[in-house]
Length: 276
Image (tube, rainbow, N blue to C red):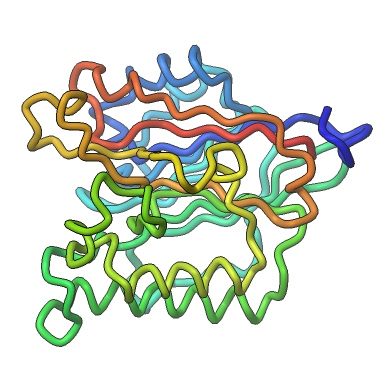
C-alpha cells in the first residue's frame, strides 16, 4: 500500500467512451476481465434511460447503476459494485440538457468518495468559436465547469474521469507541432483544461505513473487503416484525483488491446487504482 494510505481500501475506477452502450454491451465483459473495476464510468452511451442494458451490467456484477442518457447522442453512466448515491449539486451545463455529467458518491469504508464522470463536447473541426458553434460550446462548457469547480473549492476524496476531449500535454498527441491547430490540442483548449484542473487542485493520475515526456494515448481514429502502425493517437480520456487521494495511487492501466476488439470504440478503457 502506498505511503499515507495505511488502512485505506483500494478502489479501482475505470472510464471508457463506449460509443453506444447498446451496440457494445458485449464488450464490457472484456473490460471487466482485464481491469476488474469496482466502478466503471461510461460516456457516449447514446441511449435513453429506458433502453439501457441493465441486464448486461447486472450480470457483470455491477449491482449499482446511475445513468443519464438520451436518444442517439451523448449520455453517461456509472456502474458500481459498491453502493452509489447521486450528488445533490448536479448541473445542466450550458442549459442544453444533453447528459454530459454524473456526480456520485461511492460508499467506502473510509467514507464516501466522490466520482465525477464527464463527457466534454468534441468541438467540431474548426478551432474558431466565431465560426464554429460546436467549438464555442466546448469552450463555454469547460468554462462553466471550471467556475463551478472553483466555487466548490479544492476537491476532497474525489475522482474525476471521462472523455474530456482535450489532449493537453505535448506527448498526449502523436505530433505536437502538427496538432497545434487541430481541435483537442489547440492552445485555447489546453489553457481551458489547465484552468479547470487548477480550480479543483486536481492531480493527473495517469501522468502520475507515465512521465510527461513519454507518449500516452487513449484514442485512435477509425480513419486509420492500421491504427497500430500509424499510432497517431491522442490522450482524450483522463483520470484526476484530489490531492488527499494522490498519495494512495497504486497503479494504472490503459487497455490498448481493446482498440482491436470487433466493432469497438475508437477510445480504449483506462483504469486507476487508488487507496481510499
